[in-house]
Image (cartoon, rainbow, N blue to C red; front, side, top):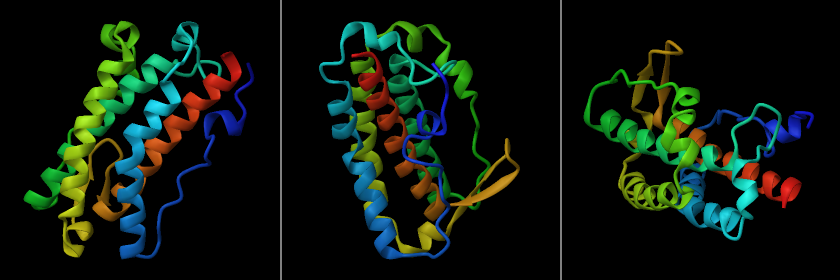
Length: 177
């Protein structure tokens, strides 16, 4: 299997928003709100053999992707809450590739992580919908990248993140079903 740009980035690369917009905030919150249902549609009726298949050579398999989404979006909820309650916090990074190699990510039923994601997104969407315009200008520091991210950009990143991995699961379904 050759890793093409379309396989690695099936919805394209992230494009950082350049203009602060209430409309873009609403659109990205809606994408985050819809992720659990979109993910469920991507994994429902996935043939058993597809859980161990990847969307590209050396890429995570379907099981790892679903568990990764839960891990990542749990961190997103905490990062948003830390940022709106503290003054430019330094967030705790984690090694997502190492997480994906842990026993739970390699063996557990992905529906467990889907249920976690569903609950996390109910909480995350509530937080997002009650944030003020000023909250979206607040920032955290990501020490791994030595970069400051405002929550407007982080919102766009996580909206794309969910869509990106759901698209990868749909690639797996198309390639291996």
